[in-house]
Length: 99
Image 1: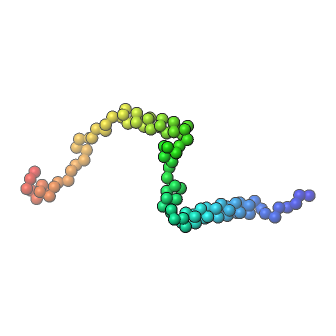
Image 2: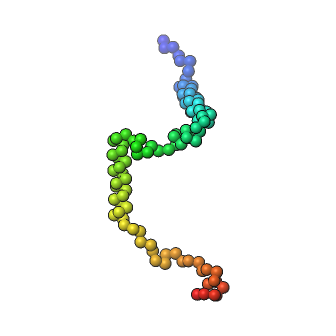
Image 3: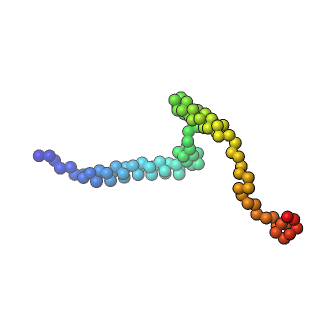
């Protein structure tokens, strides 16, 4: 006969979520209580710079930047549409001092 587990599947899920939330709470508390709060928050939030990337990631990053530059060069300068926006009259034009 199999011994019935004291915990059901939902209990195990609950405990797993609880442990994860406690872990996040510890990190959050550390960030709040650390003297370098803004630095710590930025470290958690910011993207890695090019120098911090692994060599294989650097190649991918540089290839992506190069492709972006080539696409911009191929597109050329955007040509402004003439008379695409109607300018509002100036105060002098409205009261008839100039046309």
